[in-house]
Amino acid sequence: MSERANATAADAAGERRAPGRRGRVLVALAALTGLVLLFHGWIPNTPGRLGSLVESFLPWCWVILVVLFGLALLRRARLPMVVVLLATAVWAYQYGVLLPEPRPGRHDLTVVQHNASDENTDPRGTASKLSGRFPDLIALEELLPKARAQYERTLSASHPHHAVIGTVGLWSTYPLTGVRAADIRPAGITEPWNRGLRAVVETPRRDVAVYVAHLPSIRIGVSGLASRWRDESARRLGAEVAAERTDTVLVLGDLNGTVDDRGLAPLTSRLDVPDRGLAFSYPAAFPVARIDQIMARSANVGRIRTLPATGSDHLPVLARITFDDPVSAAPGASPGRSTR
Image (cartoon, rainbow, N blue to C red; front, side):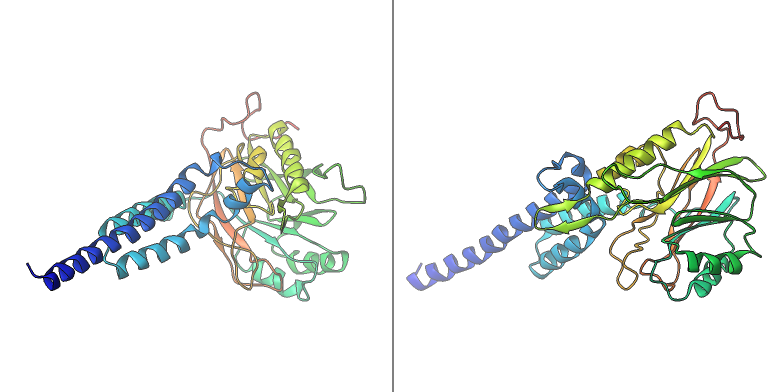
């Protein structure tokens, strides 16, 4: 073989090997993404609450996977495409994309959760949009006194029963009893701060203890995720739910965290979260995460979805609730009736 032929053969072999090297990088990145999705709980939370920070943005792993698949497709690298597709299947399973759509059927409650914003200039319009979805319950946060009066007037016909404590409120088509503040204020906050409410909703089938909460905000800075107050507030709310003697419980609120965020684990570990739907709710202009949550005990939360924008920087979220039957979550409590 001539020197020229040898050089051509070497160049061809190099070209064949080069995609292999690039392919190994794509395989590694896709495999790493899949492992993070599956085992994010193993990521240490120090320094800077790294684990919570990663978990807050887990749903956005799909962006990484799309980019990796595009690169693999351009380079015609089969193995990377297969690994990316496997990681995509993990993502789709975790966020309910592969689950079949539930058949329309009986549900017991329709609930709406919305941080209405203390800067909302159209509370009347916001209330009309929310009530127009015909929910049984509407939970609101960031209620200012002036806006509260407008919500009360606008919702009085459709939701005649309501309770407001501090800056959180609950409007209901069913009677409310046992209304009180839920003590979720972190120890480091000394000024007046009432952002938790507990009430019992007397539905035709059973009593339901409903907690409306607005947990402290988090901040992302050079030192990582600042969530100490949010995490403490979540522990306090989790303790309230653990002590609740009413069998069926709903938690509605702006929790300033996703359901994957381990900082909310003292609460989310005691409740069922929706098994379908991403429903990013914040910020309204370009939602990147769902921090407005609907969770339950002794009940199933159906697919959660966002509603059209209001005058708030959050989008409302809606879900249909189906009670478990029989009730079994709270040992020692009489079925369907409040004991607290």
